[in-house]
Amino acid sequence: MTVELLRIDDPVLPAVWDSMYAADHAATPFHSYDFTHAWWQVYDGSPKGKVLLAQDRAGTPAALIPLRFGVGEIRTLFTNAADYTGSVCRPHGNGARELATHLVSRLSNRRLRLWNVRADDPLVLALRSVVDLSDVQTETMMSADAGDTAVPGTQYPMGSSFRQQVRKDQRRLLRLGVEHIDVRGQEVAHHLAEMIALHTATWEARGLPGKFVDGRRRGLLRRLVELGDRFPCRFTALLHRKEALAFRFGFLRRGTEYFWTSGFLPRFRGYSPGQVLLLMDTQRLADPTTDVSVIDFLRGDEDYKRRWASQRAAVHAYEAPARTGLRR
Image (cartoon, rainbow, N blue to C red; front, side, top):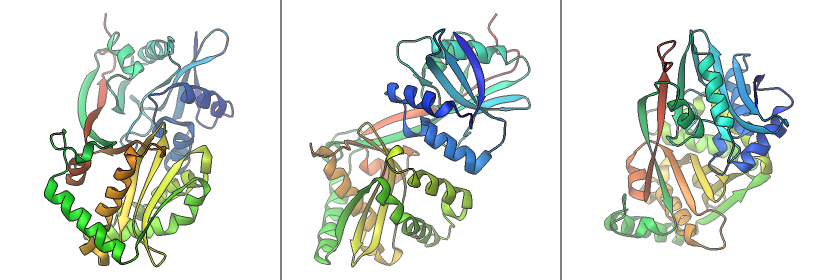
């Protein structure tokens, strides 16, 4: 097996990466070539961004991980900017072990830092056998799956009084003639401006600028949405006279929506449009005709996640020091 270091814009990578991404059922949209390349173009663009690729003797790709090689440090390309990072691996192979061995050979004068990685990532498991890998940070991940949010006694049950109030607000909005829309593919691009405007209005009402004040964040959203069916996204919203009162936006993969951003019109705050939209979207999780059965709320343990989520997981930040990190 061979291991090579490629630039993220190397023309061989899209096909190679896509083949492994399709085979790796644990990979999220944040692990995809499309997200990585779009992020790198907007936020980085430097030659320090690399992809470590392992291939077998026949040239079949086995595993890869995007990394940034800096002075004194090798780290996850995104640092803390992506909710999930880590390796992309073809199942039942030795690719992760080869990546680990290669990384160890580069730690003589650099430390290794991996951010927002699952504990069962194949590369993490392989590294643990050869380096002293420290878990330096753990972040909570919460998600809602079909039906569980309404069942008392689940890990993070939505309280009955809260649920009743949201349903009351839902009835009030429906009486106003509000409609629910669920948009996919190329059509999501038509809602780009209102996503940015609503998100910004939500945060400005709290005295904060919001994430899209950063032009790079707007650029990343635009690039991802414009990929259309190649990078599946979902936009749901409540409309009143064709005006969006609230929206949610996320990435889709294998029945899971990765809930990335949202917003609502502050003047409709009394109707809780964001909560009502989330209620309507979670109610659809149990529908056998829908292609979404889980909503992943991504990092953080904010109150709204505790109210809606039924499952809890974690991602970790790992470090291995230079030189002394090697096991003798």
